[in-house]
Length: 173
Length: 170
Image (cartoon, each protein chain N blue to C red):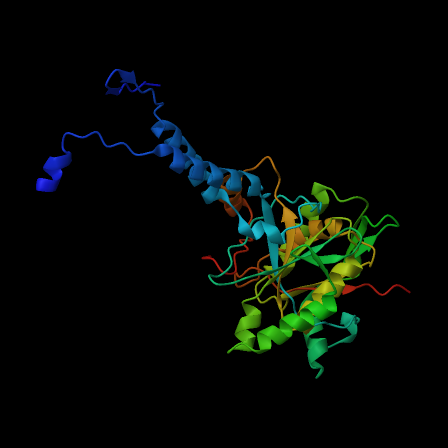
């Protein structure tokens, strides 16, 4: 690091050059700003999702805000970390949707994503799906983990060729 | 111009320390709030209306019952669970397809059977009804859903109408 010499009379002023350090810090900030994921708050990372080869992230339509429900192995449902009663929750969501200008369109634009632990029994899953359908939320998505050995872009590129089911309701076909 | 001349010989230095303090605070915030999100995927479904469990062979297309007509257009896939909640057998239209633990060969078999049904020209089927034991684990059910969601209809569109219901145990 160069040392700047400033002669003020006979005194020598030694100052480290902070510019490279600042450059580095700004680059780190930029990196973290780009990778920050505020939606992560809706995910319960303690759940053990099933690992499936063709699970790929869905690109929802612009402006679509999915409802993410986490279902733990003991059967408790959570939204944003708060335990919920599914019947009350869907009733509240339906009331909220009914106040929109176009309720049918609004319900369609709010897909429900179910993130369930792999040990949750089917009866509990079915209960949530039935409630969802009864309250008009027919677009439903079941979450699974993509295998960790594959990176997301490579997975998408290869699986589009081998697996015909491109599940992107909002994206281009 | 005069202004510039006045300072042209001076040595102007910015105090970087304050900016660096702020940058470090921002950096600390982003590092502390950083949680690497897992690579997660979803299987999108369009939930069809509930269909009662009926015996398809007793129905005819001439039936006036709308529910029955819907039922006729659906393939029924029955999933049986063992006492531990693991998948033990799969039945296609009440005919045993395979028994035992789920293997890649079973996945291929199911995939081929469904492909044959849905991709036949003029196939009347456009949805699948998965009838499962109550105790079947989500992880095992999803293995079947993965195969089902790969299917395409005769018109080339992906099969999205996948219904679920609990199996009536007698």
